[in-house]
Length: 275
Image (cartoon, rainbow, N blue to C red):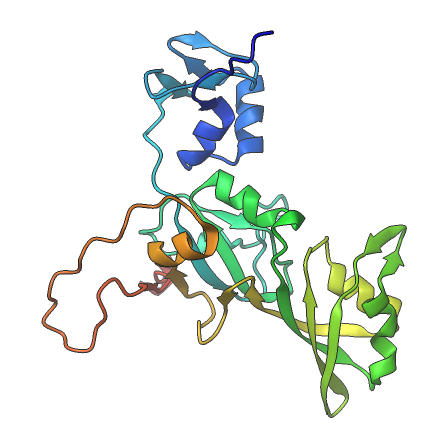
């Protein structure tokens, strides 16, 4: 019995690590005949490649993969989490800082939701953070119209089925009543399409504001709408166990009080009509 396994990594994984596309998108590129290896068009993703192989996508050499990077982004309402929108609506990518590399969102927030969204340049990391098996808690601050009691949310704590789709038990805390609205904190480990809004409708509540305040160990904190902040490589290594090059020692900046290697905050560029 031959127990040898091919050396290298799957071609779709290599394309994703180069930041060109997610692994699934890379598989579609391969099936469409857009990828060559050593001058030969390939049509299957079940192929391992090494650094010695020459890979092109749409006729362009694939760049060496960049180290995995992760950013926190405060998504405002009114933006869709997609690269292109068939309805012509504004997307999160329209106003991201120009100096960011090509990034992908980890999961999504719908048009009317706001708060913390993770962005990464690495398709493999994106997939890893989206898997329910990762087990990271996502926490939300939710405002609903009405006067619920703590008992109102008991079905959500037990797990609820909505339109034949099972939602896992949520941790729901009624925080305070504010006029005609109530504020609630919700924590869950997997985020299905419009899960919180649909679950609230099932118990007679209507969500009129939804803010994601954390995703695993990463917090929205004081990040302002449309602001982006990169996670330091050391934190990625500690939290995710990634093999990421250590941060270079910071040169003296002449500005006292600035910590070496501090996470950098990037503000979005002005719109063209504001310049």
